[in-house]
Image 1 (cartoon, each protein chain N blue to C red):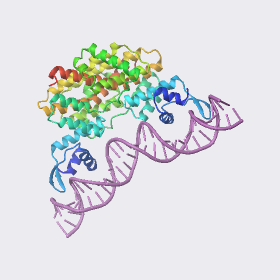
Image 2 (cartoon, helix red, strand yellow):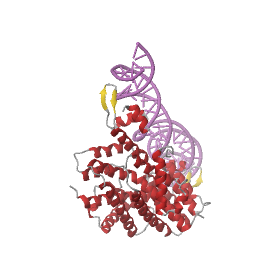
Image 3 (tube, each protein chain N blue to C red):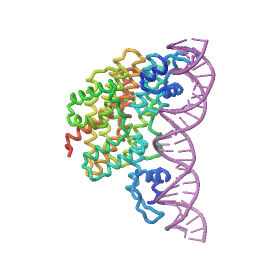
Image 4 (cartoon, protein in one colour):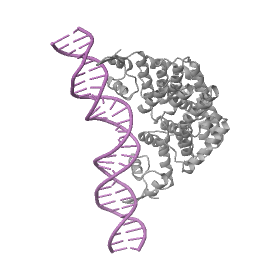
Length: 214
Length: 214
DNA sequence: CCCTCTTGGGTAACGGCACTATCCAAGCAT
DNA sequence: ATGCTTGGATAGTGCCGTTACCCAAGAGGG
């Protein structure tokens, strides 16, 4: 298949596909000669993956490139490959470690991991972007004066642990390493927006149950 | 307090505060004369709220304005006000209703709400952005060839319902209407990134438990 | 074989967004 | 009275995803 057909079947303009090729989000096609390259079903699939990450997941192009670079790096073990791919996702800005709220949030997050018994996660606290993101969120809440207790976070943590188990169960149903990694990454990106949608629907549902629609 | 102090105490540059004032994210200060205005603690709080939504929640400035406009509109009932505020959050692009995957995703989403017994949410399917977002996510998955069964979505839905109950429990602990609405909106925005962080940490934890770190 | 169309490749431009910088006249503080 | 700060306005900046345009080489149909 050539550029025009790839464009037609994916619904992405040829100009944009060229841009993705330039940015390294899409591997180059098989070069037939100086002015022709051929693409296959794998390119189409990759292109759809890229579009899903950008449009549904809202990732910037640079983040997609980093994520895919790690997904494709077969020299890494699966755990590392997956971790690296997830860590390439866009992160919350670096917290100001001088800030009192940030310091308090660090202690709170550590206590949370302890209470949840997440011993593995505790090993990663200094390096995992997810940990940093947690700290920043908690600090933002506290700075605004919200003072719910530590148990609430524990409850949220337990629920998200259940979600994570489901995530990994899904990953395990795929036989090949490549599919496992891709699924895990896609799960982290696409189900993000799916879970967000489900949560908001659930809020609307529950709010209607409790208060009606008056 | 004057502009300079507001800037110092919030860590936001005066130029940016002026920009927010122009964009209507911040109400104008009490005008003392042609060249002086005074701000109070409420302005500081609002500014921190705006910053949290933009930096932690990643909302665009225009979305923050819409959200706050609804939060502040006292002519609406709480349910409506909250709904309106949530619906102003940035949404996934409009799905192409001609697309077969989108149509199938519609049916799947309807079946999901049925299976979950979310009767209130079903009333909102045609208008709720969350519903649309769900459809787009599911369609993206299916387009990429993922074919997990309907039960998986039901499981995710149940878990997010638990999350939503927690969300609303928190909201109920605040006495005033204004605080309730603000908390609910902030909950939808800030806890989004907090839950995301918890989920990724949980994934790291669970992945370590299942496969170790080899 | 000729003529048109498409190809990859490169570069420049566009539109949106979140700020940032600069200039201004009016006024407050010392 | 004089320097600094204020609100107000406008223009500029840097980034980002995309698009438009141009080119020479080659494909494809008659």
